[in-house]
Image (cartoon, rainbow, N blue to C red; front, side):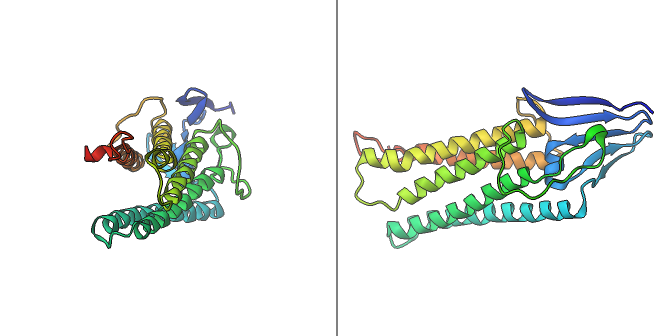
Length: 255
């Protein structure tokens, strides 16, 4: 029996989708995000029927479910704490340390969510030759794989959460000049937001299999990426509005 025909798709040096056309008429599709999130391959039979085959083993599927739960839960809790911190700053006692503490707790949950997302990329099942069952390697706490788009996207996200944590930690400092405030608090904030936007764009590249964003309104995965990127845009707008003008000592959003 002949070897299956393979077609690769992606952007630049990154491969985000592989399609195998088997001689018996079956088509097997590996997509980076589907394999990473659900441990599955998409299979189309000779008659045109489409299905999703859970090609990873039970241990790998359980691993993915746990990492998904940790990452999503951490980001939800972190976002809720950021909202609470804003409410405390606006309507609370006026104690800056109180609101900064709530923000910092939210940042810690963002760190957990970012690292869990990176672990998911590191430990996701890998495709095998010819579109066979996904292969699950041993558990890893760290790895360097810059030529994998899913790793790169989650790594940039994780670094963004760490830089953002520097901003939140520096917000406890008191008696700063305007220049010190912009350098120690505002600059890490903006850098973190830029990294969030870059990570979101890379996630779009992964799910669209091209360098330009696409619209796939019927895809739940696409909506997840789109909502996350919209949140990153809001973070960036908030950061830009928090810049303190050296000449006046007032925030941009107060001008």
